Length: 122
Image (tube, rainbow, N blue to C red; front, side, top):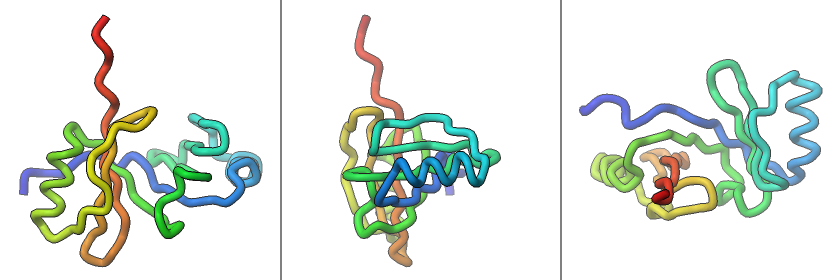
C-alpha cells in the first residue's frame, strides 16, 4: 500500500430539486454554502467534510450516494483501484471544473476521483 489514494473531498447526495435541497441544508440544518453551480451542484461545509448536492446531469448514475476523492492523478488513481478489484465506472475525462473518473468498489459503491483542470498557459 502506498498510503491514502487522496483526500476525501465530498460525500455526494443526488437530489431532484437542488433549490429546495439547498434551502433545507442551509436554512434548516444551518450548513454554510461554499459553492453553487446553478441547478447542477452545491457544496456545503459539514465540519471538515464537504457535503455536496448533485442535481440534473450531475447526479450519480442510479441516484446513489457517492464518495469523491481529490487525487493528484485521476488516471493513476483509477488504475490503482481497478488493480485492486474495483470496476471502472467512468474513465478519466475533463469536465467544466475538473478532471474526474469513477469506479465501483467490490460492494458496488460509487467512488469518484477528481483533480483540478490544468491551468492554461499565460
